[in-house]
Image (cartoon, rainbow over all chains, first blue to last red; front, side):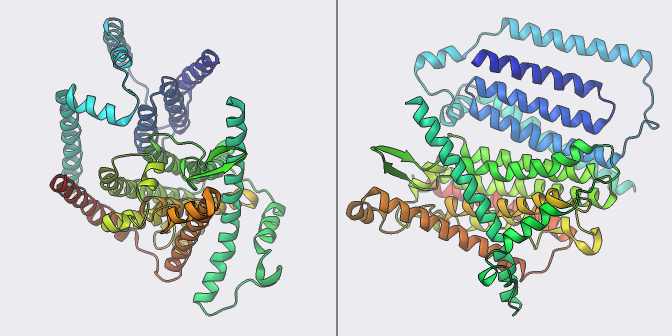
Length: 168
Length: 343
């Protein structure tokens, strides 16, 4: 039962991910990406990670993709406006993607799943209380770093929009 | 055992669906009656006694209208728009505790479709996905005014979601749980959260007006500027779905307000009723009390609609970002200090 569900979800994830890249209309690709995010949330649910699944939907589908759609709809992208990228840019893009994929693969192969420790300790590892304690005790420093990063990017965005305002 | 749970839950879900639909249907009639009452008119009174069959007549009319498709290359997305709006408006009801429990056929029946431990976040997830219905529908209409309206609606919903979430964080800090069932249970007696979180309640109330696209924040449907709003190009039941979704989400947000801040199914003397009249009677009264609270909030929505004129767009954004969000953050800090001091 779960295996079939996994295959169906994976098929949806992969298909929508490919359609995101392949479809000509930018709005269609954005909508395919939203579907892709939903199926990834489904994968999280299969791990019984309710919190992660819901937060994934809120942050990616509910906030980021809506803003993305917003911009694409307002930009009014036409085929005529689209300029072809030079061969050098394309090769550079493929190369940098391969490097990122290499790093990700390396980390995942080497990674030790921590979840077994929580299973052994008998805690309800999907409850938010346990998650909060783990985040703020064991992973305190990376968690704070992430929040500082978000703050910095937010201030940067505000600064950029202010600057444009003065110039015009 | 497994099967009986599935059957029980499916019956429950169908009943909730039917009740939501019925409430949304009669909310349309109630809206017209309240409008008439506030403007010193009589209101619809031809179909049935006192206009009681008016929603049925309206539905029949919408079904019988011509299906019109604008000249758009996105027929599928055009149909998907109202469908997404309607389904997200109905999905939230899954986590709401309509009552404590009933004792029927020798077993306890929990009056909630599912009790997940991230219920509050689930509601926010569904709310944020609900924007897609309006956005996709408005864009696929291939009409400038629809697109403008969809943009307004979605930017307004995104902006007010932030303040809403911050208002809820103060509540969650106080209750220490995200499960609506536990939040309801904690408010037993007269320990309603509204007495402890009045500012949070006000922010949540204002934001829920914006989330449901109701006056004074219904800029998406500003006739004078935008013809009819994001559903300009829609006709027949697709248009009906958009309108219906608004009433369904009004019902759901009234329910959330009642559950989070006004004690849900709790009423003073629920323990006395359980002891003297039994679990079933006490809980049926509880459901009745919850629905009375919901009806009050639905009436409140209508009352505000026919009292306060529409905001201007810049006023709306200023209210959201410069007043409600700082207020909500201050509320969080004060709640945190009070929790620290009283612990």
